[in-house]
Length: 332
Image 1: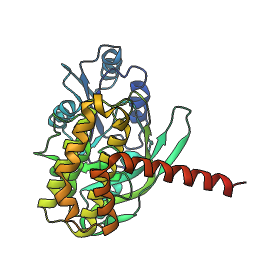
Image 2: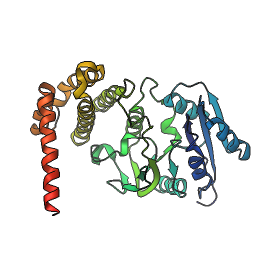
Image 3: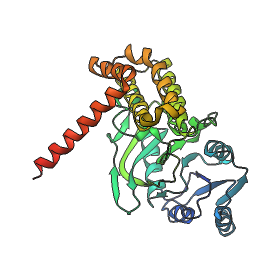
Image 4: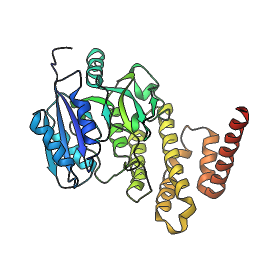
């Protein structure tokens, strides 16, 4: 595929990323596949991000810069999709980077398999520059709704690290009322519109785990919108009549999300409304979860959590401590 026949649009929303945006854009410049356009949506940055992006646009016409009033990453991505002209589209967070073979490899797999989405593995990059591989559980073409265990990893909880045929994206939007989980919801729509997905078992995306990221740091009311996101994801798949194995993975993923949120907030629940948001969501989904195909053990543990959260968290803490001590003793 050396003729660069197909145009790829990279959508990059930017908000106050002056420390990282050059690293991000430089990783695009060195791609081995060079027929691309970069749609940069400056979401009302008040640092030097806009100035840095403009310089790239001045030097290379493939970088198209749009400055808008701050309205959130979902709105920025929606605008980016409307501006995109490529036959294929990918999303890149402004604090992350691409492997130089990212575009070439994913496009090659899409064209050779006739799939509508190709997804690569990724590296988690931490503050001390150490990397952890996050490889995919499958390789090649997968009928996701029949074969994939959603709870296995985080492959379908983000939209980056993938290349999409624009035909399945057209007509879809990111939910602008969600601040966390909006990409998981969007990806769920993509899965339902794609009969098969191609998995590329190479780490071609660098995901930087930064504390200032919207998915890290202290709990806020905006972050609690992840409950709304998962409620919509559950209903989306439930109404589509997905098979038992896939739905069980959805339920397990939701349970982990809501329990972890409650666990982080439990100590201050009496003065924090966020705790009640998570618990309200957990109770709202109880009927679907308890009537699902999950094991009896999982259902009992979920009921335990709903009715006696304090005892549930104490039990989990003791379990973690026991496993920690056992691991320590085994290494002596």
